[in-house]
Length: 622
Image (cartoon, rainbow, N blue to C red; front, top):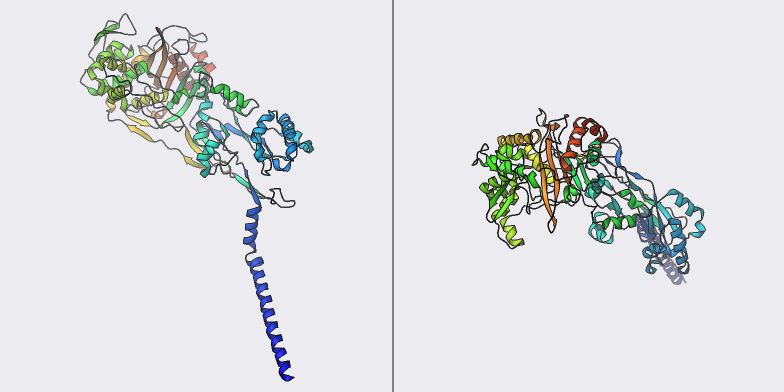
């Protein structure tokens, strides 16, 4: 008996020990799982069951150089979403019709965004943005008719200056599939708003900020779990952007150009800051957010006048007689031809088996360098171009940046073209001939440049060899603190080996164009002394049909103790307009307005020009 009792007791102790040990291990494991690792497992569970919805960041505002009133700001609006999985499939077509009527869009647009393959999806799909609070209120009051419909705040852009500044500022839109494939790794997502052109595109990463996130808990069917609290990561607003543009000068340039296909560049040569960049025709980016936005965009896209093109930087033209500024620089710098040597202009020049006619068919008589530039004598520059030869002319043109990008901080800049013998042989399969040299000597033939490139060429003369990279961005600002984040300093783009004395001589010659040359009849402003060059570029539009681009490139003040006071103005009016030699006339008003601190109406009232409001139509002078 004693042995049996001891055996039972021993077995009881063993079983108790095993049971207690197992229970202890279980308790320890539960403690480990629920207390020590509980937070991690909770996070994992939430990750599996959470669905992420982006919260759009407030896009940064855009200001002109005064940074007082914004050129672009955000207007509160909403986007309407639909979670098709919350609605029986048989009821979706009818829901599309009701929602389309409420949003004033075709039901087919909704059907396209919510195809049958998504009908079991509980993840919301954005149907339309730019919805007003009134429309949202209407939907909210009749929610029984709109199952699965929700909305979220999505501000839209309001462009205060929707005239010629539209090309500079650009516009925004929803990201496309193609853009998303390129930008996916840069924190862009479906439904993201991004810049499509202009400053909105160039500085999109600065303006758009960082989107926030809303996390909601869903079940296995992707339906929201009742009572589960959403977790929100707030968005970070985008930085404000301050441009170099002067709103007053921009309006002045826009009105002076008027409804003519062309452009105006106003540049500060000492820094490269763009004070105005006007291009016509233009467009209204505010209309892209309207009900007919898609139709308006499509209409602009097929418009033969190409309103989306910023003609100041994206269109290149033959420079005509403005190229003679480059030729004048080459003649002075080369030194092999005395600037006092006169050339007899009889109105034409014989070269090979061709006769080249000067723009003044009666001839200019004897003209030296100063008279040749002032009167824009073609015969003088043909003669000098033939003496310099194509290699030297092309070398000087390269030094002035012809055929090269300026590097302006706007997308889509055109390079223009500086034709060479090698280029002609490769592209046209023809050798360079003497006629090509004569053509390029007066800015005709195949040479083309943009108005901004011409502005840089004038800036090089003004700065006596230095060219600063033209730029639109002045600085970026933290919208919450007002502190400057990035201050865009001037960058030296190019420094010419040509001597300052040469450029000083060219400046004197350009002044003569205004005082006693081709520009004297129309440059009447007394607000500032300027120096510049007129230009007429011939365009062959068809058989025996010729028309002319009108150019004017100038700077002022001609003499000043402070180089920062100087501005370069380039006006270009396309040959598609009626010929009225408008470029120098517009520049006259612009210079008057800038230096007399007047708007367009006051400048015209002061000048009382004979060509306003009804410009004289005619060939003009070169």
